[in-house]
Image (tube, rainbow, N blue to C red; front, side, top):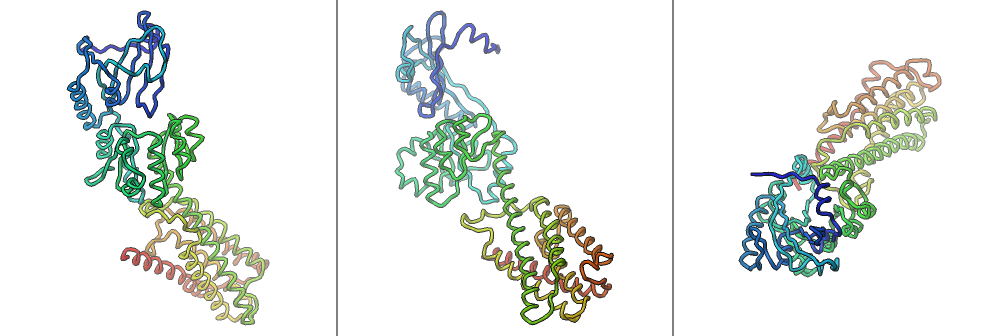
Length: 475
């Protein structure tokens, strides 16, 4: 076997390109026109089935003859066999041109001479398989929309674990024959769309959105812009994508890697959870503080906390612990949960219930300790002050706990912030700073009582989480 390696510059020098008809998703082919020995010739490449429809002749061992139906059938069978082997196949044809010709597809791309097929192996990236598994566990459905032959698309999808028995694939021609009503009825059963045009993408997009799905769509060409613009999230390819596609998109992939989309979903879920946790933690803790003051006034007691103490509580508990909620790594289970509902608010019904429980337990527990030490004494105010802080620190720990256990490796920032907060409180309590804060030092037995009361919030919230998870698994 002889393999000739000819530099592109040499080809251009001997066979200069004088014209070109670019690839078009409607035509599914591309044509270049070259000067060959002072004569013009068109060379066409594209989808084999499309190329064959444009061919009137075939070149066999250097001899050109009229192409027959039998020839086309044999070529299509070879194409099908290659497609089943996960190969992407191109058909090639050429045609001599007159010195003066019309540079239009209708004139150039007809009565061609078929010369052969070329098969290419374009294996998916290794990280794609893992990304697809992540999508499935996260409740994200993947639909393949490609210009490849249907058999090639199915073979690749099977290799990636995207296509299983019972799934359906639809070609562009079959899509054209389906009414919008029929497409709407089968849209959720179709996993692969092959040999499609940009117009097909818009139809598929509309049908999916009618079913209430949030649709993210990828694309790279100018003709993909309408679908990218219409999608809930348009994703353009940063390397191969056109400027038009990038402008129409909400997101641009700098590496053109599907795994990057999945990583972005994971990051987005993590950020959303961090925001939700911080809002819930802040509101629940502040409600506890409000109830302590409000209920004390309501029953005619002296204020359990003075202004400087309230400011210190907010600085100590909303500062470092609140910040740590967004710094620690996201939970490993974040991509094992189904997508949240489209209209779900950050402050959901479950969050409101949690805020009310925390506020009530924190408020009543702090006032109980305040009352048990005599509401008129400095020590009672000191106990209420420390109890409220410990309640809030136990509250923040529940956001990293699972079944009463906290993973130290993934919660280092949060645990560190709690330790620093406790040390800062000890510094205020057992140094001359206690004069400014109007508090007095307390003993070991007092600390034991404070911890026993404040940890009840941790026990209640963790028990509630376990109960709710149990209900979800049973439903």
